[in-house]
Length: 499
Image 1 (cartoon, rainbow, N blue to C red):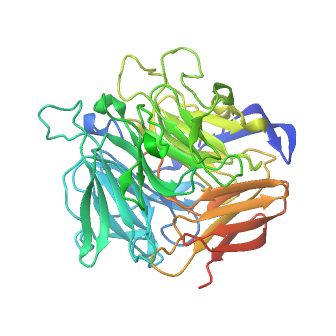
Image 2: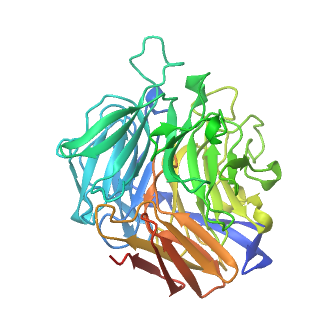
Image 3: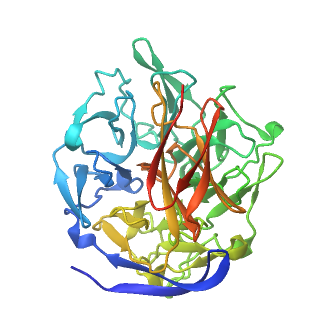
C-alpha cells in the first residue's frame, strides 16, 4: 500500500483568521478493483463516476463508466477498500447519475451510453435490475454525454434531460453534426420523448436555480464540433424555451466540458464553473440576476499546466466544489487531460486543486498535495469515503487506472452533513437549497442531479464550519416553504419536511 503523503503549505483561512495549513492526501488507488475507462473516438469524452450509498451503511459506493469495457459497481467495504459487485453488464457506458426515480428509498442509476441508455433500479445490498423497458424509457441509439433531472411540482417521477453529442450517422459529420437533445417527460404510460433543439454537442447539463432565482437547465457545449453558430445554452423550464440576449442571457462560446455550481459568497445565488480547453471560466452571480466572468486575479482560470514542461493550454473536464479543509470556504477540484493527442493542447496536464483563501481567491496546491497526476483525467468526485469528516477524492482516467486519494489533512475545521427527506415522488428534495450560518458566515448549496462531467453524487450535502461547534440551518424546499433548525457539528443530520 502506498502510504506516502505529500503536503502543501498554502495560505488559507481557518476560523476567521489567516493561518498556514498542510493539505495532504494519501494514494489509496491500490485498494480499488482493477478498472480502466477504455475505447476509441466515442470514448474520448465521458468517463464519469456516480457516487452514492447503495446498501444503507452510509459509506459512499461507486458506479464507474467503462467505455468499451463493462461498467463496474464498487462497494465500499471500509478502510478505503472497494469490492466489485455484480450488476447488469453494460458496455459503451460514458457515465451515470444516481437518483431515486421511483421514490422507494433506494438509489437508481441513469446510465449514459454510446447506444441505448439504460436505467438500473436499485435493490437492497447494492443489487440492481435493468428496468429500462419496464419503466418505458424511449429507446434510442445515440451518443449520450450529458444528463440532468428534476421533479415538477407534485410529480411522482422526474423529468430527465438527456444530452446527445455528435450524430454518428450523419455522413457529413462529425463537424457541424451535433445531435438533438431530449426531454424525457413522465406520462401515464411511462416516459415520452420531446426534442430539445438545437443541440450543440453538450458535455454537461445542470438543472438548478440560476442567478435570477429561476429554475433553469444550463447546457455546456463543445465548440469543437458545433464550430460556428452555437454557444452555451439556458433552457427556461417553466417557459419551455431557450433564453436569448433579450432575456439578459449572455452568449458564450467555449469548448464546454463540465459544470460546477456553488454559492461562494453567501448571498443565496450560485456561482458557476465552466471547464473548457483553455480557460476555465468562473461566472459570478450578480444582483441583477445575470453573470459576469470572474477577474483573472481570482486564480480559477487554470488555463495552462501548473507544473513545468508543457506550456500549451490545458483541457478541463470534471469540476467540483468542496471544502477540503473544512474552513467554511468551498475549494475547487478540476480534472485535466488531453482529449487524446491534440497537438495544440498540453499532453502533460496535471489536475488542479484550488484552495479558496481570504478574499475569495484560489491558490493551487495539487502538486504538493499529491493529486496532480498526469493521466488523461475525465470524471471525478469529492466524497468522504471513510466518514471522518474530510472530503476524499476519486478520479477516472482515460486508458489509465482509476485513482483514489484519502484526505489526511491535519488541523481541519468542524463539519456538518445535511440530508433531506420529504413525502412524494421527489423524496430527496431535488431543487432545495440548504443554507448554513455560523455567526456572520453564511454558506448555501443546492440539492441537484446533473453537472460535473458524465457523473454526479447522491450524498448528504457537506459543509465545513471552521471552529464553529453548531450551525443554524435553513432549508428552502422545492415548493418554496422553509424549515429552520440549529444542529451540532460533526454529524450527518436528516431534515424532513413536515407535511
